[in-house]
Image 1 (cartoon, rainbow, N blue to C red):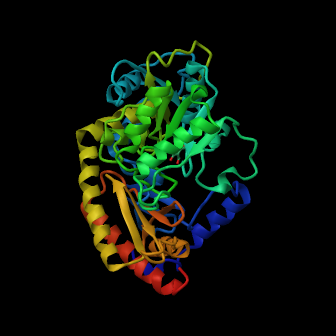
Image 2: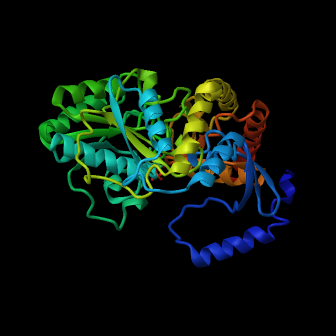
Image 3: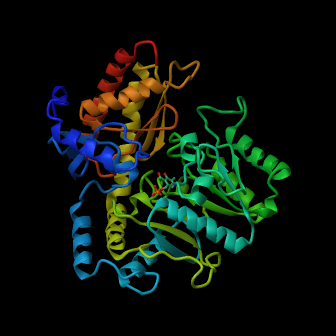
Length: 442
Ligand SMILES: Cc1ncc(COP(=O)(O)O)c(C=O)c1O
């Protein structure tokens, strides 16, 4: 696409956006006026016919790319058989087959069981309810900067931006937020942030949060919305130990990091840490709504009626998920790993020429770049980050922010190398132009 024509033919987009403003909740967070008409793989087109490279995959959801033909075929074939029967009250093979598959790929030794919902927040709600039910304990420990969803239970754990919580109190009272160890912005200078973060949790146990009352510690193996923060290697194994010592369940929220995104089926496999309850959603069904928890069988001991959902694990989403997992196992995870290495190398090379690129981090195709005023002060360059997103859009690249001044690179796991290169080139030009635009006020 030619960047200079970006706003010359925006008639339809503008019309739709005006109708959206008149009819749809203003709480959504759209950064730029992209009105999608269609997508194929990692390319998308808007209603005015403009083409973009998609580095967002709909917030880390369309892991197999837009409209993957095998996913589409599975959806159509299942929809032609039946679209809904409520797995809460009836049985159907495709849901059972998906549960078997999830139990097989979940990074948990021994027997496990699955509960199906429709979204990430519902998976987190289910994990919270199950943890309370199984342990009989009321409290949770979550982390500052964490994002777990926006329903009341999940929102009580979420702590990544004040706007997500402002006006909604009271939330669940028994949630304590610990500090997530951020190697780039270590709140304990001179100390190993993983060790310090674990000691801080023990400090909470000695002061505000009796450990024998804690049902679960809930954590993202890599913080997503909070800034694509990869914790130091000792953190997750240390959490596992802490949980075992106090009889607390470890709930890993792999809603964003799971399903191949980080170059392994689940991010916790990078550290060989097993959760007691695993939350998945987003990438699991290539774009259809589906969420799930996988828990050790002895933990999932609630009786009929304790928890259920009309649409959860609907047959069409399950059919899409089965194909998605097959594609992941047949090469997409490996592709994510290889492309991720290439992407990180390219971004590090760009960082060597732009001192405003403070940090490049990630695993697989979950890669974040943090923009700063300069590398010494590390002051977040928020205006610059926002401007880069706008410039990238005008040049035909869809990007998303994260954290205070972060940018996320989360293309589909099967993005062709040529498109990955083209997108990174657009990012570099967008960064150069955004720098010129904002001048000294980063
Ligand atoms: C780690 C994590 N957990 C939970 C959620 C909530 O998922 P949903 O928006 O599907 O409710 C998200 C969404 O971004 C997420 O990134």
